[in-house]
Length: 549
Image (cartoon, rainbow, N blue to C red):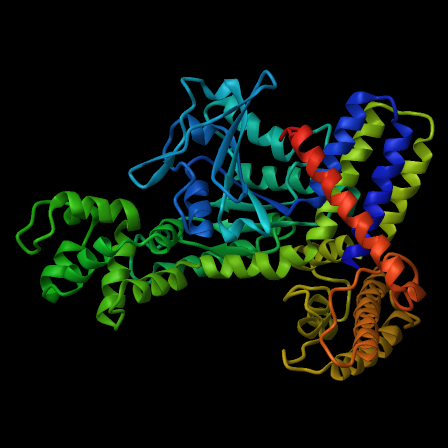
């Protein structure tokens, strides 16, 4: 299904290129959209000022490359993408670009703006050789609801523009307390990103979760209860797929833990209990002069800045519990921070939907182009858009999951949880959707899906079932049909190649096009694929992506 979505969207762009032939601005936009379709998922990190966006980004990457202070850099939209070698490019408001020097200061990547202010710079593009950037482009955005209207406007133009689709495919939204500005932003992102479908592709993060419990050792338990309450809140439930508590500072410190810091924390853990507890009673007490420890005040201040009082308390507790090496302590702190849960959500809920989310963004950009500059032949483009809308079942699943969270699905109570699981609430893998064990065989998957088809057909055909209930049943049946189709394709591949594992297969045509191809035709397909890849690389160099388009 992924290959089909991408192929359909490429067909749309081909038709759009023919319709807008001769319009240089439109063709340049189509070039950019082809590049966007070939890129990894664009995942923006947004939130109010001081919510901890850059700190969380560093924690996700495992390296301190995002600026976390209150300087000019935090007021600029900054892209982080995978690159073989480190590069930093500044895109100026006048359309020109300039390379920036790469240097570090105090362990952090330092951005030298050359004396320019944030209002002179459109965006910064950071290429960095990190595995975490191979499957997603992470985008750090300025805080919303800033005292500076221009700073807030940068994020609003980038993510919730009125006259174009969002430049991000999905959003990690950080909140500290549920504020009216948070709800307003997520509503605007949903409306801009999903159009009439009202699908949801945002996950909320209860940021700085350790502060919810005032830095107590059980703070994250308190934060989890608050996150669950927000998750069920009517104003937020329909706007975010989950609310996950994360202690970003703890996660960043743990992922970048230095051996010298482990030695200092180990000394604290070895103090007499009374001395240790007196020292850790508050951040102020921890940094005061004290004869209880040989650690200098500057070392303790650095520990506090890197981990927070909660992180220092937790680290000493983990060391006393058996974390005798820096790697063991790092793993324990990361596990407690909540960042693993966020990464797992992105892996299971957003990455599998990446093709549809990217295609949706491209199609909405083309629709915006049609509104701005109508041309003869536009009906050909509109036909392609309608075909995508009808076939992009993933968007319908997201819409129903948002409805399930906010008001419940219009189904008998005993069928609601099963419907949500089948629609992907717990993950998009076929076995997860069907409630089977990970080790279930393909035959067990097919049998379970076929049995459920019969059950949901009965529900859909119930004489007294309301129209809304029938619509949900039809969506579930569509999901089951796709599971069975994928299982059938997998079985055909296994039968055709019994002596070795089957490679990835991309079906470009109808049901009969997946077999019987000769080596010559396969070679022609490979050559076309190589030519398309070279063309996209050329366009990526010639048509740098402007983040506000």
